[in-house]
Length: 191
Image (tube, rainbow, N blue to C red; front, side, top):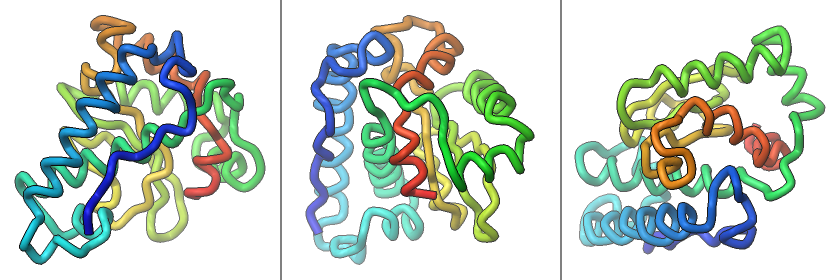
């Protein structure tokens, strides 16, 4: 199975000022493309060659895991955004968030704190566990809730390449602003 670069459902400049055109061109067009290309090279002729991306993440380690994890992470990441934002979730997803954290605002606060406090590079994820309950997870490097058997719903990349051109070293500011471009409809589909 040959993995391909995910197609963006918006123009490269559509997420500005939260994620600018230069960041999209670098992050999606070069950085993610490199993960996809490297993954395809690494799995050629191996047991992983015909597996889905999720199965590769579940079953691999080392370089294959790193490139598969980052490909999956970035695919989910880029597809969860919309230029106009959608405020906050509705329906069953909002109800599940409120049951877990008491309010959407409290969830946002805890999610931002988890992303700010993750040391070094990695991801902060909203995920659904095997019992259908929500959680927030800090995953270093290429980590993803799939590796734990959970369903990733929304992930924010806290590697510096994701925000440095637009925010320099102000990770917390980026985490605060990214809510303005989340597609809660996409996150709800994953839920």
